[in-house]
Amino acid sequence: MTDRDAPEVLIDLRGVSKTFGEQRALDDVGLQIRRGEVHALVGENGSGKSTLIKILAGYYTPDPGSEIRVGGQVLPPGAAAESQRLGLRFVHQSLGLIGEFSAADNIGMVAGYSTGPLGRVRRSEQRRRAGDLLARIGVDVDLDTPVGQLRPVERSAIAIARAVDDRDGEIRLLVLDEPTAALPPTEVEALFRVVRDVASRGVSVLYVSHRLEEILSLADVVSVLRDGQWKGTFPTGELSRESIIEHILGGALAAQERLPGNASRPPTGQSDAVRPALQARGLTARYLTGLDLEVAPGEIVGVAGLDGSGREELAGVLGGAVAAGGEITAADGRTLRRLTARKIRQHGIALVLANWHPASAVREFDVRENITLASLQDFASSGVVRRGREQQAARDWLAAVDVRPPDPGKRYSLLSGGNQQKVIVARWLATRPSVMVLDDPTSGVDVGARAQIYRLLRDQADAGMGVLLCSSDLEDLVVACDRVLCLAGGRQVAEITGSEISESALLTAISTIPDELPGSDGLTTSDEPKTDRSGAA
Image 1 (cartoon, rainbow, N blue to C red):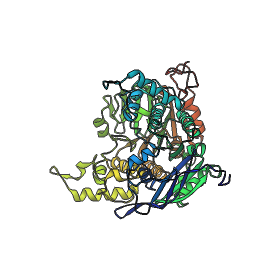
Image 2: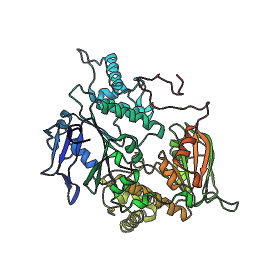
Image 3: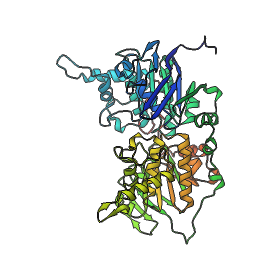
Image 4: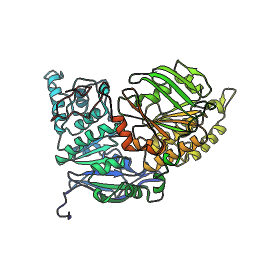
């Protein structure tokens, strides 16, 4: 396609820079987004993606000399209202929905409620408006169910429908920030249908994601940021997963992304003389229906499963954060039947949550405080914390897990997603656990930090720790695990080991659900028969 044949430029960034103190987060970025295209933005955590989005939203003011034009009009710096007026809309990873409210109420919170002469909300008109917005993107969702009870893909669709409400003016650009981070594999394509429908109506989509396979499947072009600089925009037809990684990392760490996996490292296994690092029997919870599992010292066991399989609550059960039945036998031989977080930690089991989880860290604390939070007793004498010892321990852990910059005093919330996740891992390693249970540790983490987390887990396993890795990202399980337990309907339906582990094998196993188990075939769209929660028409 020649430049003359290409769609007109909608967003034109010229020399966009942003400096925070002595740190230059964006450095002379210049890129273009054309009308009606799906434009992917990729880069490591800390590459400047979030800063660029916040500048487009008017939340940050760029440095002098920066220029952004929307449809030929200058976007005033730091003007959120002007960003809105010019048709820019944003759906962030957190979605900004209230779980107790219905879809109609969540849409009304931003788009405004339909009211009568006395200011009363017209409920029927509000529901109709919400239904119309959802229908516009081809989605059919129960408008009265609290959104906290809906599937993740349905919640994402509601956030997108709310963003494309054009009663206050034409929608020109929809920015989606890690929209599939919380979605199981089977629901990703349903969200893609929504994105493609939005783009087909002439709305440009800026799609930010670390999932490279998704980008290759969905996007028209890919722009790469590295160290705050724009490294080019490339048609996806000319890219492969490997070439995107090379652009993102500059080739320096590309080999780390292709780490030797389980094929070169058979499962550790255990003899009668070796006590398991973790043994669970009869685990029951909202989705789990009597699950048994074991993790040997020195092995990494993965857990795969679709949304509702029990995979998403297993880590919380084992960490005592989710109410459950059953029993756990720890590495010290003690059998625990009352699964509380405190008791489980006392017996050497560490729960590592994803950095987006509210309970994963204290965002208002600095890095030092977050690292030592679970092991403060190691630095206390007569009830007083020895700050010098605590500070040195934090520095040692920052070096061990390669947090950059290694500044214990830096506020945790200012770290990139990958560095936040490494701080969380460091906190629990500092407790010297026998087994580490991780829940989606690479969600929203760039390819460089992801490879470092894989290596860190392998090093801990080589040192004798047991590792249980629950993940919605099949790549985690393929690269890092010695064996993978596949869940469906709350129980194990397959175990895949060693060189047999592949994304296709895992997806086949977790998608092959017996008829009697509840299932889902993706998002219900308005041109398909509506189904109930079991998938029956």
